[in-house]
Every structure is written in C-alpha cells, then in structure tokens.
Figure 1 (cartoon, helix red, strand yellow):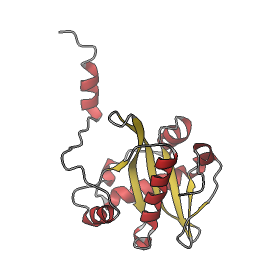
Figure 2: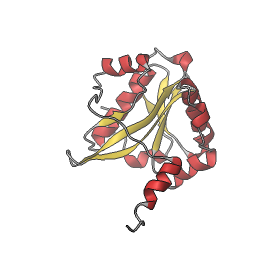
Figure 3: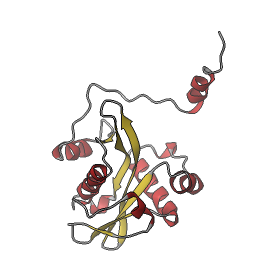
Figure 4: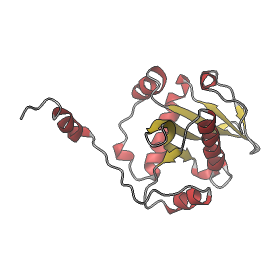
Length: 183
C-alpha cells in the first residue's frame, strides 16, 4: 500500500515515489491548469473528440481548485510530465460507500508500455482503499481495444449489463425545465 497519502496532502505538492524507476506522482496544483488542459486535449485528439473540448484554463481552475469538484494526479517520468488522471467521488447506494470515478487517465504515447498507466491506476486503487471507498470505476470507448485489453489484464470487469446515459447542452435545459412545468 502507498505511504499514507491522505486528503490533506493533495495541496502540498509532495512528490510521491513509485516502484517504477524515474516515475513520481503528485497531486496537481493551480499552476498545473495549462498542463492539465494540454493533457485533456491530447486525450481528446487520441479519442477523435478534440472538437468537443470546450474546457478552458479558467473553467478548470474554478472547477478543480476553487470548487474542488475533482482531483488530478500528474505522472512525471524522468522529471517530465507524461500523464494525468482526473477523478472524483461517486457513491454506491448498494455499498453505502463512496467510490472513486476516473474521468480521464492519459499517458503520452511516447512513454506507453513502461508501466506508467498501471502505476497510476494502482495509486488510485490504494487511494480508494485509504479513503474507504468501495470501488474504483471508469469508462472506456468501445473501439479502444488496447485500453480494454490493458484494463482486463489488471482485473477490471466491464459492466456489460449497463449503458451510460448522458444529458447535456440544450437537452439538459429541457430536462431541467420539467421541474417547473405545470400540467
């Protein structure tokens, strides 16, 4: 298990040693906003969704560091930022406990295959255990076979009986308006 990484430590920019030579992890700080946005855009490009990125540095700073709605860990390999994971709490009513949901996990193409993604996921699993979470979850695009194989190799199980639903943009407004509609 990782050495007592507690919630309060995420703000002190402490480098966290890993068992992979040259790789250190750290919790992101406000000065990392441009780096986080760069990683988000690289991931979106890989997923062929770059045109859907509307996040800005200002939005990320507000969401991540002022409202603290999510957390980010940065992976640094040989003192260079090479990956990130953005995650937040969800909740399982069946377990009666929170979980950690990984919104994004990204490792730069040129350093893939070195075990960096595995270490980052392992760190988040340890963090989930330390924070008394019942599970660690994430989504993966159906066409991303390399990621699917990687996750299955680590023991992750696809939730084949579940489908993710999303409401956004104008549909979100329409759904919100039902609350005030009178029949």
